[in-house]
Length: 59
Image (tube, rainbow, N blue to C red; front, side, top):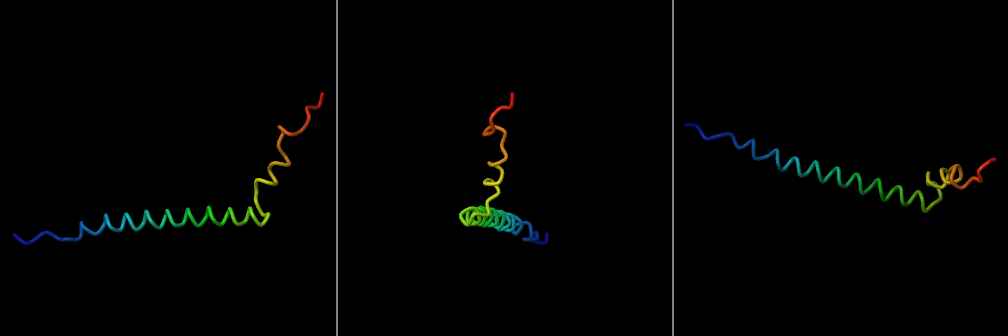
C-alpha cells in the first residue's frame, strides 16, 4: 500500500494562523477606535448629544 498523503496535517495549522490573523485584526480595530476616541473623533460623543434620555420630556 502507498503511504497516505501528509496534506491533511497542514489545514489545522492554517486554521490557527487564520484565527490569529482574525484576532490581530480585531485588536488593531479596537486600538484604532480607542486612539480615534482619544483624539476626539469618537462616534459615541456625537450620539450622546442626541439621546432622548437626556432631553427633558415635553408636556
